[in-house]
Length: 366
Ligand SMILES: *Cc1c(COP(=O)(O)O)cnc(C)c1O
Image (tube, rainbow, N blue to C red):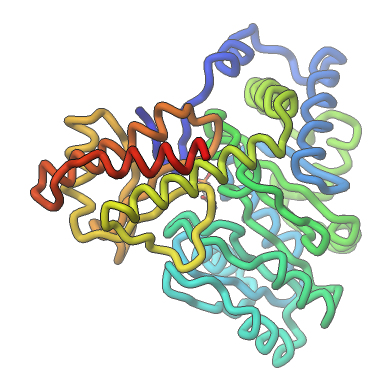
Protein backbone atom coordinates (compact mmCIF):
# COMPACT_ATOMS: atom_id res chain seq x y z
CA UNK A 1 0.00 0.00 0.00
CA UNK A 2 1.71 3.13 -1.26
CA UNK A 3 0.82 6.03 1.02
CA UNK A 4 3.77 8.36 0.55
CA UNK A 5 3.01 12.02 -0.18
CA UNK A 6 4.26 11.71 -3.76
CA UNK A 7 4.56 9.72 -5.82
CA UNK A 8 1.00 8.55 -5.37
CA UNK A 9 -0.49 5.43 -7.02
CA UNK A 10 -1.82 5.83 -10.57
CA UNK A 11 -5.43 4.60 -10.78
CA UNK A 12 -6.18 1.81 -13.24
CA UNK A 13 -8.49 3.89 -15.45
CA UNK A 14 -5.68 6.43 -15.90
CA UNK A 15 -3.15 3.73 -16.76
CA UNK A 16 -5.58 2.35 -19.32
CA UNK A 17 -6.15 5.78 -20.84
CA UNK A 18 -2.39 6.20 -21.22
CA UNK A 19 -1.84 2.74 -22.70
CA UNK A 20 -2.95 3.62 -26.24
CA UNK A 21 -0.60 4.02 -29.21
CA UNK A 22 1.60 7.12 -29.11
CA UNK A 23 -0.02 9.97 -31.00
CA UNK A 24 1.93 12.47 -33.05
CA UNK A 25 1.77 15.74 -31.14
CA UNK A 26 1.31 17.95 -34.22
CA UNK A 27 -2.04 16.53 -35.32
CA UNK A 28 -5.63 17.77 -35.04
CA UNK A 29 -6.37 14.59 -33.09
CA UNK A 30 -3.89 15.44 -30.36
CA UNK A 31 -4.84 19.13 -30.39
CA UNK A 32 -8.40 18.13 -29.50
CA UNK A 33 -7.14 16.10 -26.56
CA UNK A 34 -4.84 18.94 -25.55
CA UNK A 35 -7.69 21.48 -25.66
CA UNK A 36 -9.89 19.25 -23.53
CA UNK A 37 -7.16 18.72 -20.90
CA UNK A 38 -6.25 22.40 -20.96
CA UNK A 39 -9.84 23.48 -20.27
CA UNK A 40 -10.12 21.06 -17.37
CA UNK A 41 -6.80 22.29 -16.00
CA UNK A 42 -7.89 25.94 -16.23
CA UNK A 43 -10.97 24.99 -14.25
CA UNK A 44 -8.96 23.13 -11.62
CA UNK A 45 -6.47 25.97 -11.22
CA UNK A 46 -9.20 28.62 -11.41
CA UNK A 47 -6.90 30.99 -13.31
CA UNK A 48 -7.20 32.72 -16.71
CA UNK A 49 -4.18 31.06 -18.36
CA UNK A 50 -2.05 27.96 -17.90
CA UNK A 51 0.74 25.88 -19.42
CA UNK A 52 1.74 22.23 -19.21
CA UNK A 53 5.47 21.56 -19.44
CA UNK A 54 7.34 18.30 -19.87
CA UNK A 55 9.40 18.42 -16.66
CA UNK A 56 9.06 17.47 -13.02
CA UNK A 57 7.64 20.14 -10.70
CA UNK A 58 11.03 21.75 -10.19
CA UNK A 59 11.11 22.77 -13.87
CA UNK A 60 7.97 24.84 -13.35
CA UNK A 61 9.51 26.38 -10.21
CA UNK A 62 12.58 27.36 -12.22
CA UNK A 63 10.48 28.78 -15.10
CA UNK A 64 8.57 30.98 -12.65
CA UNK A 65 11.72 32.22 -10.92
CA UNK A 66 13.45 33.18 -14.17
CA UNK A 67 10.41 34.63 -15.99
CA UNK A 68 8.74 36.45 -13.12
CA UNK A 69 11.67 37.96 -11.21
CA UNK A 70 12.97 41.07 -12.95
CA UNK A 71 14.89 42.64 -10.07
CA UNK A 72 14.85 40.65 -6.82
CA UNK A 73 13.04 37.67 -5.29
CA UNK A 74 11.80 37.01 -1.79
CA UNK A 75 11.76 33.30 -0.98
CA UNK A 76 10.08 31.61 1.96
CA UNK A 77 12.11 28.70 3.28
CA UNK A 78 10.37 26.44 5.80
CA UNK A 79 11.65 23.22 4.29
CA UNK A 80 13.30 21.50 1.35
CA UNK A 81 11.02 22.95 -1.31
CA UNK A 82 11.14 26.53 -0.08
CA UNK A 83 14.91 26.21 0.09
CA UNK A 84 14.85 25.09 -3.56
CA UNK A 85 13.53 28.47 -4.74
CA UNK A 86 16.67 30.07 -3.28
CA UNK A 87 18.89 27.47 -4.94
CA UNK A 88 17.24 28.22 -8.29
CA UNK A 89 17.94 31.95 -7.79
CA UNK A 90 21.58 31.07 -6.99
CA UNK A 91 21.87 28.97 -10.14
CA UNK A 92 20.68 31.90 -12.27
CA UNK A 93 22.47 34.65 -10.36
CA UNK A 94 19.15 36.18 -9.41
CA UNK A 95 19.34 38.35 -6.33
CA UNK A 96 17.07 37.23 -3.47
CA UNK A 97 16.24 37.54 0.19
CA UNK A 98 15.16 34.47 2.10
CA UNK A 99 12.88 34.30 5.12
CA UNK A 100 13.75 31.12 6.98
CA UNK A 101 11.51 29.22 9.40
CA UNK A 102 11.65 25.95 11.29
CA UNK A 103 9.91 23.27 9.21
CA UNK A 104 6.84 23.21 11.47
CA UNK A 105 6.34 26.98 11.45
CA UNK A 106 4.29 28.90 8.87
CA UNK A 107 5.65 32.09 7.30
CA UNK A 108 4.74 35.17 9.29
CA UNK A 109 2.67 37.72 7.38
CA UNK A 110 4.35 40.53 9.38
CA UNK A 111 7.83 39.32 8.33
CA UNK A 112 6.84 39.36 4.66
CA UNK A 113 5.28 42.81 4.94
CA UNK A 114 8.25 44.35 6.74
CA UNK A 115 10.66 42.74 4.26
CA UNK A 116 8.94 44.13 1.17
CA UNK A 117 8.46 47.53 2.83
CA UNK A 118 12.17 47.71 3.61
CA UNK A 119 13.29 46.63 0.14
CA UNK A 120 11.46 48.02 -2.88
CA UNK A 121 13.66 46.01 -5.21
CA UNK A 122 11.65 42.88 -4.43
CA UNK A 123 9.27 42.21 -7.33
CA UNK A 124 8.36 38.55 -6.80
CA UNK A 125 7.59 36.32 -3.80
CA UNK A 126 8.00 32.56 -3.89
CA UNK A 127 6.20 30.38 -1.38
CA UNK A 128 4.75 26.88 -1.01
CA UNK A 129 1.04 26.49 -0.36
CA UNK A 130 1.93 23.24 1.41
CA UNK A 131 5.61 22.77 2.26
CA UNK A 132 5.84 19.01 1.87
CA UNK A 133 9.01 18.66 3.98
CA UNK A 134 6.90 18.96 7.13
CA UNK A 135 3.33 18.92 5.80
CA UNK A 136 3.03 22.61 6.66
CA UNK A 137 0.32 24.95 5.31
CA UNK A 138 1.56 28.52 4.74
CA UNK A 139 -0.96 31.40 4.91
CA UNK A 140 -0.42 32.09 1.21
CA UNK A 141 -3.77 33.73 0.48
CA UNK A 142 -3.43 36.17 3.41
CA UNK A 143 0.16 37.00 2.47
CA UNK A 144 -0.90 37.55 -1.15
CA UNK A 145 -3.75 39.84 -0.10
CA UNK A 146 -1.54 41.94 2.19
CA UNK A 147 1.26 42.21 -0.37
CA UNK A 148 -1.09 43.27 -3.18
CA UNK A 149 -2.52 45.99 -0.93
CA UNK A 150 0.96 47.41 -0.54
CA UNK A 151 2.28 46.85 -4.05
CA UNK A 152 0.14 45.09 -6.68
CA UNK A 153 3.17 44.79 -8.98
CA UNK A 154 4.84 42.22 -6.76
CA UNK A 155 4.26 38.78 -8.24
CA UNK A 156 2.99 36.09 -5.89
CA UNK A 157 4.23 32.69 -7.03
CA UNK A 158 2.68 29.80 -5.12
CA UNK A 159 4.07 26.28 -5.36
CA UNK A 160 0.89 24.25 -5.05
CA UNK A 161 2.37 20.88 -5.97
CA UNK A 162 0.92 19.31 -2.83
CA UNK A 163 -2.11 21.64 -2.64
CA UNK A 164 -3.71 21.79 -6.09
CA UNK A 165 -6.22 18.94 -6.13
CA UNK A 166 -6.13 18.77 -2.33
CA UNK A 167 -8.08 21.88 -1.41
CA UNK A 168 -9.68 24.91 -3.05
CA UNK A 169 -7.02 27.60 -3.30
CA UNK A 170 -8.22 31.20 -3.51
CA UNK A 171 -6.24 32.46 -6.51
CA UNK A 172 -7.59 36.04 -6.38
CA UNK A 173 -4.19 37.50 -5.51
CA UNK A 174 -1.95 34.73 -6.84
CA UNK A 175 -0.04 35.35 -10.09
CA UNK A 176 1.40 31.91 -10.70
CA UNK A 177 0.21 28.61 -9.25
CA UNK A 178 2.50 25.65 -9.83
CA UNK A 179 1.62 21.99 -9.75
CA UNK A 180 3.01 18.64 -10.86
CA UNK A 181 1.73 15.31 -12.07
CA UNK A 182 2.87 12.82 -9.42
CA UNK A 183 1.23 14.13 -6.25
CA UNK A 184 -2.48 15.00 -5.89
CA UNK A 185 -3.12 14.38 -9.59
CA UNK A 186 -2.08 10.71 -9.31
CA UNK A 187 -0.12 10.56 -12.56
CA UNK A 188 3.37 9.27 -13.25
CA UNK A 189 6.05 11.96 -12.79
CA UNK A 190 7.13 14.16 -15.72
CA UNK A 191 4.49 16.83 -16.27
CA UNK A 192 4.42 20.20 -14.52
CA UNK A 193 1.69 22.79 -14.82
CA UNK A 194 1.45 26.50 -14.07
CA UNK A 195 -1.61 28.74 -13.83
CA UNK A 196 -1.16 32.46 -14.52
CA UNK A 197 -2.96 35.70 -13.70
CA UNK A 198 -3.38 38.36 -16.43
CA UNK A 199 -0.75 40.46 -14.61
CA UNK A 200 1.73 37.59 -14.72
CA UNK A 201 1.25 37.25 -18.48
CA UNK A 202 1.91 40.98 -18.97
CA UNK A 203 5.08 40.73 -16.93
CA UNK A 204 6.29 37.64 -18.82
CA UNK A 205 5.69 39.49 -22.12
CA UNK A 206 7.92 42.35 -20.99
CA UNK A 207 11.00 40.24 -20.42
CA UNK A 208 10.71 36.54 -21.24
CA UNK A 209 13.65 34.45 -20.05
CA UNK A 210 15.33 31.19 -20.98
CA UNK A 211 14.93 28.86 -23.92
CA UNK A 212 13.14 25.63 -22.99
CA UNK A 213 11.60 27.28 -19.92
CA UNK A 214 10.61 30.42 -21.82
CA UNK A 215 7.08 30.99 -20.61
CA UNK A 216 6.19 33.49 -23.33
CA UNK A 217 6.75 31.05 -26.19
CA UNK A 218 4.98 28.32 -24.22
CA UNK A 219 1.92 30.47 -23.45
CA UNK A 220 1.69 31.59 -27.10
CA UNK A 221 1.69 28.00 -28.36
CA UNK A 222 -0.57 26.56 -25.70
CA UNK A 223 -3.25 29.17 -26.39
CA UNK A 224 -3.39 27.46 -29.81
CA UNK A 225 -3.62 24.02 -28.21
CA UNK A 226 -0.12 22.98 -29.03
CA UNK A 227 3.29 23.20 -27.32
CA UNK A 228 6.57 24.90 -28.15
CA UNK A 229 8.46 21.57 -28.02
CA UNK A 230 7.27 17.96 -28.17
CA UNK A 231 4.35 17.63 -25.79
CA UNK A 232 4.30 14.95 -23.07
CA UNK A 233 1.38 13.41 -24.96
CA UNK A 234 0.87 10.36 -22.74
CA UNK A 235 0.83 12.38 -19.53
CA UNK A 236 -1.51 14.98 -21.05
CA UNK A 237 -3.91 12.18 -21.99
CA UNK A 238 -3.64 10.86 -18.42
CA UNK A 239 -4.22 14.31 -16.96
CA UNK A 240 -7.35 14.68 -19.05
CA UNK A 241 -8.61 11.32 -17.79
CA UNK A 242 -8.02 12.07 -14.11
CA UNK A 243 -9.46 15.58 -14.31
CA UNK A 244 -12.56 14.32 -16.10
CA UNK A 245 -13.10 11.80 -13.32
CA UNK A 246 -12.51 14.37 -10.56
CA UNK A 247 -14.89 16.80 -12.27
CA UNK A 248 -17.55 14.13 -12.65
CA UNK A 249 -17.63 13.68 -8.85
CA UNK A 250 -17.11 17.44 -8.36
CA UNK A 251 -13.85 19.19 -7.45
CA UNK A 252 -15.39 20.20 -4.12
CA UNK A 253 -16.25 16.60 -3.39
CA UNK A 254 -12.57 15.65 -3.67
CA UNK A 255 -11.52 18.58 -1.44
CA UNK A 256 -14.15 17.62 1.11
CA UNK A 257 -13.23 13.92 1.20
CA UNK A 258 -9.53 14.79 1.50
CA UNK A 259 -10.19 17.20 4.37
CA UNK A 260 -12.31 14.64 6.22
CA UNK A 261 -9.64 11.96 5.74
CA UNK A 262 -6.88 14.27 6.97
CA UNK A 263 -8.91 15.37 9.98
CA UNK A 264 -9.89 11.81 10.95
CA UNK A 265 -6.27 10.63 10.58
CA UNK A 266 -4.90 13.44 12.75
CA UNK A 267 -7.51 12.79 15.46
CA UNK A 268 -6.91 9.01 15.35
CA UNK A 269 -3.15 9.37 15.74
CA UNK A 270 -3.45 11.99 18.47
CA UNK A 271 -5.77 9.63 20.34
CA UNK A 272 -2.93 7.10 20.66
CA UNK A 273 -0.50 9.69 21.96
CA UNK A 274 1.22 10.81 18.76
CA UNK A 275 1.91 14.49 18.12
CA UNK A 276 1.22 16.38 14.89
CA UNK A 277 4.44 18.06 13.73
CA UNK A 278 3.37 21.24 11.84
CA UNK A 279 1.73 24.10 13.74
CA UNK A 280 -0.59 24.61 10.78
CA UNK A 281 -1.05 21.19 9.13
CA UNK A 282 -1.94 20.98 5.44
CA UNK A 283 -4.52 18.42 4.33
CA UNK A 284 -2.15 16.85 1.79
CA UNK A 285 -0.50 14.70 4.44
CA UNK A 286 -0.33 13.98 8.15
CA UNK A 287 3.11 14.50 9.64
CA UNK A 288 3.88 12.99 13.03
CA UNK A 289 6.91 13.87 15.12
CA UNK A 290 8.34 10.84 16.90
CA UNK A 291 11.79 9.54 17.78
CA UNK A 292 10.49 6.07 16.84
CA UNK A 293 9.81 7.08 13.25
CA UNK A 294 12.35 4.70 11.68
CA UNK A 295 11.34 1.68 13.74
CA UNK A 296 7.66 2.33 13.08
CA UNK A 297 8.16 2.80 9.35
CA UNK A 298 10.18 -0.42 9.13
CA UNK A 299 7.44 -2.42 10.86
CA UNK A 300 4.76 -0.75 8.77
CA UNK A 301 6.52 -1.72 5.60
CA UNK A 302 7.62 -5.24 6.50
CA UNK A 303 4.77 -6.46 8.69
CA UNK A 304 1.74 -4.36 7.71
CA UNK A 305 2.45 -3.67 4.05
CA UNK A 306 2.20 0.11 4.30
CA UNK A 307 4.75 2.40 2.69
CA UNK A 308 4.81 5.88 4.25
CA UNK A 309 7.50 8.58 4.07
CA UNK A 310 10.08 9.62 6.65
CA UNK A 311 11.81 12.98 7.05
CA UNK A 312 14.80 14.63 5.38
CA UNK A 313 17.84 16.50 6.72
CA UNK A 314 17.50 17.34 10.42
CA UNK A 315 14.12 15.58 10.52
CA UNK A 316 15.55 12.25 9.30
CA UNK A 317 14.30 9.56 11.69
CA UNK A 318 12.18 12.13 13.56
CA UNK A 319 8.98 12.31 11.54
CA UNK A 320 6.76 10.19 9.35
CA UNK A 321 4.33 11.44 6.70
CA UNK A 322 1.13 9.76 5.51
CA UNK A 323 -0.37 10.80 2.20
CA UNK A 324 -3.96 12.01 1.87
CA UNK A 325 -3.68 13.27 -1.70
CA UNK A 326 -5.71 11.78 -4.50
CA UNK A 327 -8.35 9.09 -4.57
CA UNK A 328 -7.36 7.20 -1.40
CA UNK A 329 -9.78 4.39 -0.54
CA UNK A 330 -11.59 4.45 2.81
CA UNK A 331 -10.15 1.07 3.79
CA UNK A 332 -6.60 2.23 3.03
CA UNK A 333 -6.90 5.29 5.25
CA UNK A 334 -8.41 3.22 8.06
CA UNK A 335 -5.79 0.50 7.67
CA UNK A 336 -2.87 2.92 8.15
CA UNK A 337 -3.93 4.30 11.51
CA UNK A 338 -4.71 0.80 12.72
CA UNK A 339 -1.34 -0.48 11.49
CA UNK A 340 0.44 2.35 13.29
CA UNK A 341 -1.29 1.47 16.54
CA UNK A 342 -0.30 -2.19 16.01
CA UNK A 343 3.30 -1.25 15.28
CA UNK A 344 3.42 0.88 18.42
CA UNK A 345 2.29 -2.17 20.38
CA UNK A 346 4.99 -4.29 18.69
CA UNK A 347 7.57 -1.78 19.91
CA UNK A 348 6.11 -1.84 23.43
CA UNK A 349 5.16 1.81 23.24
CA UNK A 350 1.50 1.33 23.90
CA UNK A 351 -0.89 -1.57 24.38
CA UNK A 352 -3.14 -2.22 21.38
CA UNK A 353 -6.83 -1.60 22.06
CA UNK A 354 -8.13 -0.42 18.70
CA UNK A 355 -8.44 3.22 19.73
CA UNK A 356 -6.92 4.66 16.54
CA UNK A 357 -9.30 2.79 14.26
CA UNK A 358 -12.29 3.63 16.47
CA UNK A 359 -11.51 7.35 16.51
CA UNK A 360 -10.78 7.32 12.79
CA UNK A 361 -14.12 5.68 11.99
CA UNK A 362 -16.07 7.95 14.32
CA UNK A 363 -14.65 11.05 12.67
CA UNK A 364 -14.50 9.77 9.10
CA UNK A 365 -18.13 8.68 9.03
CA UNK A 366 -19.41 11.40 11.33
C1 LIG B 1 7.29 17.28 -4.95
C2 LIG B 1 7.34 18.74 -4.78
C3 LIG B 1 8.00 19.59 -5.70
C4 LIG B 1 8.63 19.16 -6.99
O1 LIG B 1 9.45 18.15 -7.00
P1 LIG B 1 9.83 17.39 -8.33
O2 LIG B 1 10.59 16.25 -7.80
O3 LIG B 1 10.62 18.30 -9.17
O4 LIG B 1 8.53 17.00 -9.01
C5 LIG B 1 7.98 20.94 -5.47
N1 LIG B 1 7.35 21.47 -4.41
C6 LIG B 1 6.70 20.71 -3.52
C7 LIG B 1 6.01 21.38 -2.39
C8 LIG B 1 6.67 19.32 -3.67
O5 LIG B 1 6.01 18.57 -2.78
